[in-house]
Length: 331
Image (tube, rainbow, N blue to C red):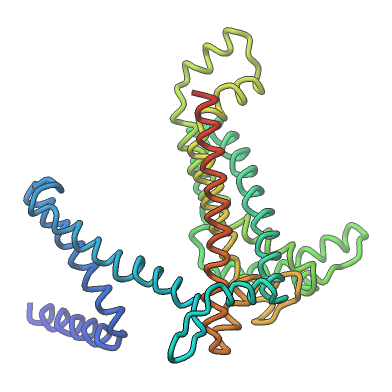
């Protein structure tokens, strides 16, 4: 018993020491999250409704954290992007946005980010749907394959990058296979060819999660719909376009949005392989913002982030309208 008490005391002391070393903003965030969690547990134990006075405590704490660490900084960032960044923070209107859209490195990073995202996200969407459809036909025997394909999603990125470096090195497995087929070896880790391992790495890592979502959507479709369609003489393709795709529209749009968000954040793969200033073919917007941050050019970082945010909001708005239109068509 005494040893247990000492162990807990030592653990509590270590946690307290770590907590006190955190910046004050992080400590405040941890406290708000803890308050939100404990109040939620208390509400559950007391059996009170979230709409009751006791249940409202969790919502207040969560809303305070949302306001303090998300909404207020977001609005503050918009204002900062409209100033000159001096100690007076003089208002300059849209001057920073005009300058950033004339910056060749920003435009290069934006172009490469959009190219990679427009390749990676649809590729994951198509492959995950095909694999999910195949595994759905194998159930319950497809559990092993489903769990296996999810493993890359759970692996640390650093470990995956090491595997990829071994595969695509000049003397790696891929080039040995090319040599065995009588083809010339390729320097995959330099120049424009670096796009290939980056795209394949993204697909390999994110494919499993999308497959799981698609399989859940496919398994939720009532089997009698397919039986009735077969009785009416509908073949595989007619069942796919007449039943399967209309029934999984919400899940399909969820996956494409999630994968686009992940593709927009492609950076560590490029950074680990190509460094802070990689080849122009894979220089992403995140590379640009990190380099500007390293040069203490916070004005460019903020303006670039909000410029990109406007593009993302417009893209997701268009996807939302498309989803609504498809749902009205199939409903």
